[in-house]
Length: 249
Image (cartoon, rainbow, N blue to C red; front, top):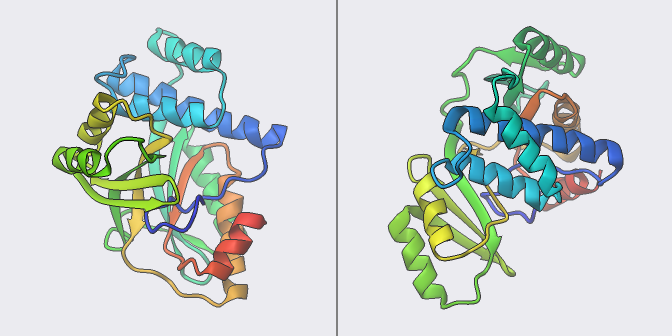
């Protein structure tokens, strides 16, 4: 996690060893290809692709890799990925939403069921966690070196709902519907973003003691290792102590 903002995606990036970086790149390239297939290769009309490219850049992906992925997704031989979301519970009842991008849904669900079962968790029916999470657009960028009141008002007019500034990092939230319009306004203001994605923000948090929290985080960690898993969201309350072990594990 970057900081402890309530809008931060609850997802830990491990050390940048070669194997981990390769796995991150694979997931980022999948997102680029799916974005192109759904909205075309022009970032001006495809906010999701623009966000995917920015995420790839922020992870230091070479430009040629990004361009190659866009070209591949635009061709007739593009891979046919399916996006599918699963819901689950850890053994200590932390709610999980698991977003996958896969070319084999049977493999994906079997792997997820196996991982959850290994840690005494389980899959639950779709929609079970609908009341626990809100879907929001979350965008981060360095604080602009222009008048704060001016750019904040511009972004609020475009649909920004909340704006948090921690040190020099700005994190803002939008509704799903205004996600694209806020990104467009940022580009008009010539503000380079670090990341932009639709995320599931928990409204109801699950409180656990430290040792139980460790068990829940092991499940999340194992799921993140699966090649088909793009994003995982949970409702574990992240105290400073729990966040510390989460970041440093």
